Image (cartoon, rainbow, N blue to C red; front, side):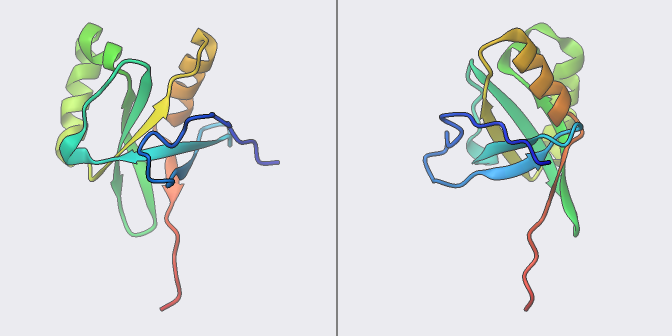
Length: 119
């Protein structure tokens, strides 16, 4: 059974586009694309940096603005991921601590299957 996390404002990009990512537990998350070249981390959001290969897209770093401010290890991972990433996504932060920590764990190392079209 597929479970979706329905967040009322997942479309933070304003484009109407959201990408579906699958977490460790199989839960599906809708993340809004953010322009990597113009990315600015704001409080109240979870961010994901990713890299694509031929078959899928995988998360290189998942975190929050607070992680970068307070955690030197997360900051180092972010810098490394930023040098390799070709996409960025944003997810509104769940209201409760358990929801926030669960989303961070679920998306750390998550992947997204790329849609293929027969040409």
